[in-house]
Every structure is written in structure tokens, then in C-alpha cells.
Length: 174
Image (spheres, rainbow, N blue to C red):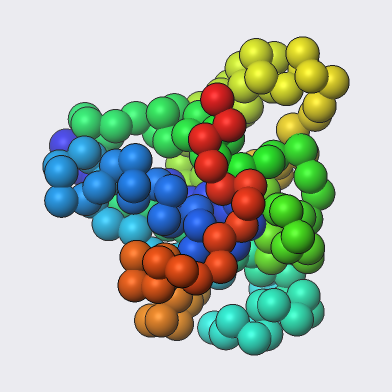
């Protein structure tokens, strides 16, 4: 069976990648085959943005995680639910103290089937985990566009720098 790509933005991409790989380590044959942090969802006229430019807020790009996975071992629906479990999807353009469009909560679907699953899982998670608390998911669900790999030092950053900055919203919420 061919692999699939999932693309999520949930605040600082260091923490998004870190919590996912702690749950599903690649070496354990969990279905996660490869991850890469980078930038997506920005202005069409900005090509190959770098960290400094994205952090300026001028490009509209999100810090995001691209996941290559084996759908025979882990489903896209499981990944979407886990995405919601590991950040606060009820804040617009913010996670913890991090503010700006680059820290928004977004799902970038790569196929029409992924869009359908993302919308269904979002509705389910909203009803089960957020509506009872009077909260509303503000995550955007958009078609994936151009992907720009982040600089090498950002890749698996928190594994290489365990005392590096971690957004306080990146933990299991349920």
C-alpha cells in the first residue's frame, strides 16, 4: 500500500514534531515513516521563506509538520484526533505565549478523502471534548499548498536540544 502525507500546524513546530514522535517513534515501526518541519499556507508570492521571515508575520505561512505515514498501520483519522489532543485548537493564531499567524491551528489536507476525514473528526472532537466546556475549535482546514522545508537545525529540534523551548500547550489534553 502506498504511503500518505499528513500536514498539520499547531503552534511551534518543534513541539508538534516532538510530541508526535514520542507517541509514535519511527524506529518502533509505528506507521510513522518520516517527519519534516517547515512552512506552508502562506502568500503565493512568497517563495522559499526562512524562519526569520515567517516569524515576522509578513508571509502568512504557518510553522507546520509534514508526516509521511503508512495508512495500513495508522490512519489519517487517528492522526487528526491526536493533532487535536496535543494543542489548544480554540485560540486564533496563538498557542500559549506564542502569537501570530505562524502559530495558528490548521489542517492542510492533501486529498479530498483527507478533507472529508478532517472535517468529520473535527466535528466529533468538537462535540465530545470542546462543546461541553463551552469552547469552539477554530482550526482551519485548507487544501495543502507549496511546502518549504525549514532549516536543518529545526528538524527534530527538541530531540537534539532537550532543554529547548517547549510550548506549554503541547501535551496530551485527554
